[in-house]
Length: 339
Ligand code: CUA
Image (cartoon, rainbow, N blue to C red; front, side, top):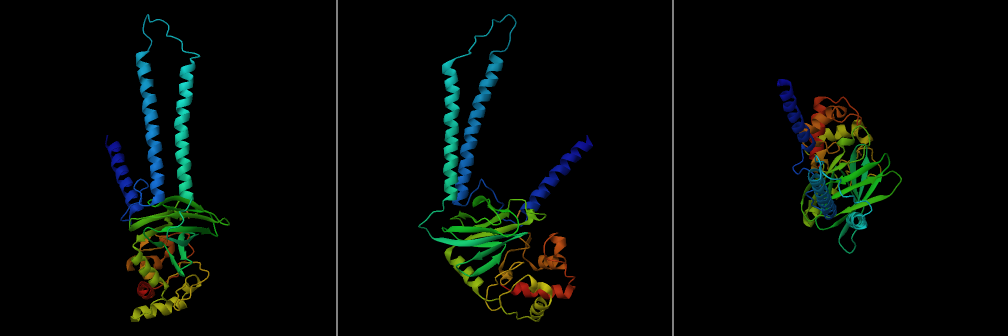
């Protein structure tokens, strides 16, 4: 059956390709069953608790069922089976036992819900604004005067209070390894919190359909030591680096003369911009990801993106600026110099 085996072969290859594409740049594929945060741990514990109970009930019920089918099957000449209608003991048992089991599931679920909602107090806390755009995440640290995109840095063993903000459509903020999904709703203040004691880079994503590029609205959460985090914040607070190479200087001039500054800001004087259409690029070169977490930040990918952003991410606000190769080279040199 050559057709069948080809289908299997191509099906397997496609599945591998899809998984590879989905997980591509991520050294640490997200996994809700391998939690690295307190909220995610509580949620995965709830999952396992319910799975174990459901599996036990399933196995017990199916065992009785199969046993009864075989043991009490119709046989030639067998007498009429004993009738059990109105057996109070049995009816009480199959009412009380499931009630107790389901109350256990309900109680554990409510406990986990309250845990996920109630942010711990009296522990070190930082506040971050996560702003859902179509289609990328902007991160503001209101107490540190830092604005960035695609990458959220947080210290370990600290409660991260995330204000969830949208002025467009409904998004959903999800870091599978660290905490479950919370909707980001225009006109409605929402928040979530998470805390992790395991340094690492964790993938985040949007999990509410929000338009054509919903699937490409990713970000990275970098959980790091307090000293690494402090160093990151101190660097982000600096004004943009002054370009030194001839190519980068040319790129800076292009950035100001092309329409880039209509949407993007590079804080050359350290003054945060109040309103942006596109990501703040002041420390663009320090980021691992670009284009809403779709591409690794390297010169080749940035050049591909600048050549025609719509070809990389169809439907986004950034237009094809018809840049020449030398203009692209200059802009790449400038943007990559903004560490
Ligand atoms: Cu934003 Cu889906």
